[in-house]
Length: 411
Image 1 (cartoon, rainbow, N blue to C red):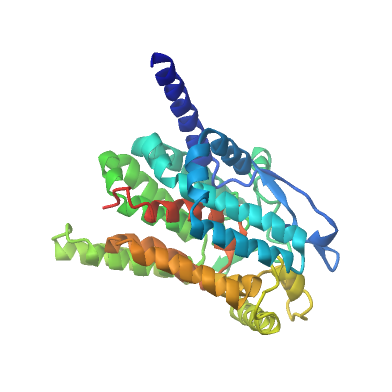
Image 2: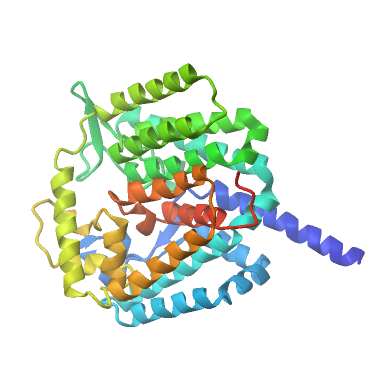
């Protein structure tokens, strides 16, 4: 009927607005932290242990209301229900059940984004998606460059979007130096430059290989430029190395570039620019710190091999270890696989990893789309933000939802 069509059109319009706002605010950290007694380690407030309600959480809640049928259908899947049941068992045996229950809700939220990824691409269309990416990409670029130039955070309205209060004298701040000139690495609205770099690295390759974006080449290449600059000024070595390796692989793989000289020229250009930023001196103790965290995580896995310490409870257990580095006990292990097994245990964690790998094996992905998975794997071997930070966590769910949507034309 006409009435039902009108209601359908209204619903589509609401979805368009909600999906666009979700993408637009995805890199922000606007939210309310609740610092409870367990959110402090040795008297130091730790964000990772503070339940938080973000603006993106509210948008996702509204997305659930207007897409209930799709989401209920997804959660009726036996494998999804089994996985959630196992996660609930993990919560019950957690070292800190309250924070583990919070992270169970976050995983459900991730699955909601995962289940709606296909619809987001269909409802918004490519131009709207690129406009959203460009809008927040330009916002992050302007803020990040201002941080680099001023050597401190800008604050003001940027505080509302998640910019932390930072300067070169802030303990533990991420900084770099080139030719003896020291400056603050680009944070944007992220908790750390590595997180910003990984976020835009994954988006870079998503926009690069998604064929339908080629309808709007100006928008596409403008975003690729902005995201590339953000990758470099994050000064994250693993992000830049991954950018270099996977771009080289893509250029070799892309048969449309028939000019061999053009391919070589592009690879050399990327290599030279990467080398310039990789030559910057960052934290000289980063390797020692990461080794210490890896040793701690292995000890935790051996101590809790079956049930793990519980979702989000890793830092509670790690705080029992002494550290040679000031305030470094409040950092999770910089490896998503060790962190996952530490919290989930070998039994439940191993089963869930098997489920995810099995799903990937069922979907015959074009070679180029494996670049997105490789971005997460490569950077995940050296950092934790895909599992611990709101922006990267939700982006991973969105991208994996696109990858595993069989009905979405990806190549």
